[in-house]
Image (cartoon, rainbow, N blue to C red; front, side):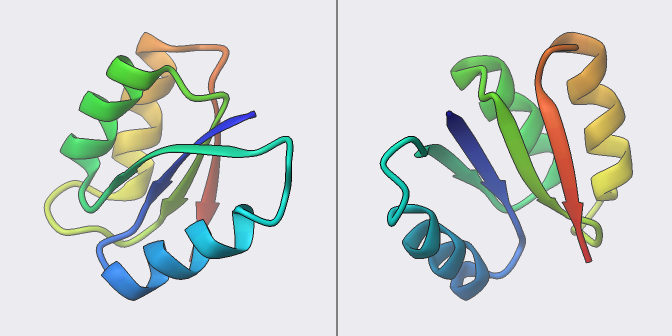
Length: 81
């Protein structure tokens, strides 16, 4: 499973990446720190799952989720708060 991690805090992204490295079937394909970057990286990497923070600088995680789902309907988005 290809996973994109989206959070504006570097330590949170690093922690999630480290945690997910423990699963053989999970590949963290990219990390983003904003909603706009999440959309760009989603289109580039086409992840199976996006782990997204609700509160991001600029547009919210909900806005990013809607934009990602419009372009990549098979990609699942899990919002973290």
